[in-house]
Amino acid sequence: MSEGLENTFSGRKNIYLSIINSLFAQRVDKDTPNAVPRLLSKGVNAGSEVYELLFNKVTGKITNIKERESKFGNTFQITIEATIKDEERILILDLPVSSSHCTSFLMRFPNIDLSEKVSLLSYSFEDENKKQRSGISVFQNNEKILPYFTAEEKNGLPELEKKVFKGKTVYDDTLRIEYFRKMILSKFSQNEAPKFSQNEAPKESQNEENSEKVPF
Image (tube, rainbow, N blue to C red; front, side, top):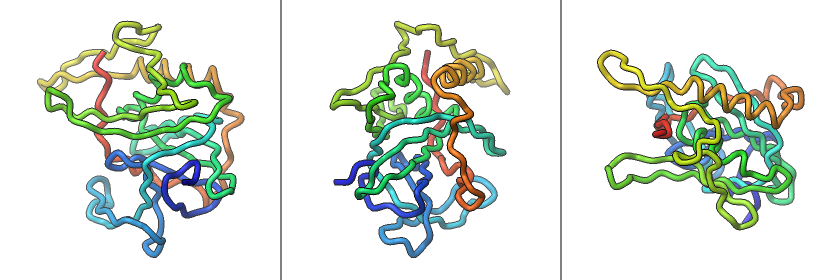
């Protein structure tokens, strides 16, 4: 089993990934071996068919996180150096900043040893209250990395701001995202962000997962 992606892969040295239906997905051409078709359900291209390679797990060393601005909403791009079929690859995992997958990863980020490889596994399940829960589990040296920020030990993480919008209660994560942004900047210099050529630039975010917030 190859390190990095638990499946075959396609593309240049830089492999761009998003999370679709709780699997890591790489957008590819229709004729790519093992590509799976999917109909887009959102955006200007809704109804169009795309093709993706799907992976259960990503393994490698996290070398950078940077924020990417998009008309569809900002994302945090996690750069992971991985070895796939004896070749060095750079994986770029694109996560919407307010998504539950991004939040669950950043909750664990301070407990990750950046000098060691990590394995990321996406999950989704229905809890006892019939609410869908999704996120990313992180493993390092065969041990599961626990959250640094919890309901009991917030460690400085701002609360979600409860607001009423059009008669409905919503939770504003603006302060929390700013906290995460500063946390990332304290670990990585944005000047060290990988440079992409024009033909390697990532496609717009493909993530259509629920952007559920952490309830504390």
